[in-house]
Structures are given as C-alpha cells and as structure tokens.
Length: 263
Image (cartoon, rainbow, N blue to C red; front, side, top):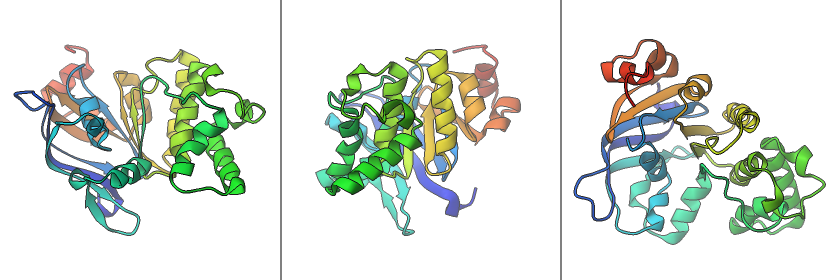
C-alpha cells in the first residue's frame, strides 16, 4: 500500500476512557486506504467502535478521554494533520464534515427530509437556495433514496422506515463530500432487505469516499471490504487484505475467531 493512496493513518494509538485504569486501545497502528472499504471485526468489547469513534474525535462530546499516539488525516492538497491535536470547536466541526459517521441506529433529525440533508450544508456556509436544492438532490441520489423521497421532501424524516432513515443519514453525510465515512454497525438494526440495500450503497460509495465499517457480521466484512482489521482485547491482532485475513490469516487468534472457535 503506497503512502499516496492513504487517506488516514493510525500510528501507535492508545485511548483511555475517563476514570479508567487501563487503556481500552493499546498502541494501534493501521492505514486507511483511499477509495477502499476497511472492515473492523472482533468480539464485543474488543475496541472496534472505540477506535472508529476516535477517527473523528466523536468521543470528545464527553470530556476527560486520554489520547496517545497519532491519527493523521491526509488532505486533498497533500498536507497531513494529526487530528489528536485539534482543540478548537470550529476545527472539530471541519473534521466531522471531512470524516462523517453513520451510527448503528438511524439518527434522523426531527425535521423535514430536505432539512435533514441541508442541515450540514447550511452549517458549512451554503445559503444559496438553488445550490442547496441541487446538493440535497445529488446527495439523496447518491444514497439511492431520491426516487422514494422526491415527492415528500417537506415531510418529517421521522415518518420513514428504518432502512430509509439510515439511507437518509448516509445522504446527510455524503452531502458534505467527506473524505472518509465511518459506519458503526450500520445494518444491525435493519431487516435483511434494508441490509442488502445499505451494503450495495456502501459498495457504490467507495468510488467517491473511503469507508471504514465496524461489523459483527463476518459475511458482511468478507463481502464488502478490501481490507480487514481483526481486534481483540484492545489490540490490533492482524491487518491485511480481506481475502488473506479470511483464507490464510497469519495469526492463530484470527483463524480461531473467523472459524468460530471463540467470540
């Protein structure tokens, strides 16, 4: 993997929750390649979601966390920024526009479908009505939900089905043209048909954005991802191309997990 293709690097990264005696993540090092899907797998409590949430500093909504090491974001202009150094509120907003997050449970705002997608765009300073309308339409098309929503843009997003709400949340993130999208078990609360639609969408999105997905579903990881990270007890046990991780892992622990011997 050449450095030109890397959009984010986690280097020697440790994370400790407030009041905890031991770190939840210990010296994690892994790259995120541009326009690829990276899956994080491992048993519950191994640190997958903790690492994912560190990638856009969402933990900082609650004070007192301790970060060590580096998480570097590579920008379009070739500059590299260690996001662990960010302190200003405006810089956090900018970071989360560039590194968007989709949660396990769909989180639409209690407002219209249109305003859900336009919310972040307005926050980013876009006021022009025509530009807003174009960007909202483009994002809804990008999230494969335009046909279902184009005649009800002024209706509340809370009236949508779970699968539609999740695609709306993806549209809301995509509208800001992020460099990375983080998915925290995005289909675990959805039925099989909605799950299939979201997986298809994630596969299509990687042509425009880099994706990191935490999943408990090993079939999903093997179907969707280009790279897989296997985590256990706060440590990164193995990181490699997905095919290698699933067919010939280097570590016995990885093999035991994938073949269902534990976890």
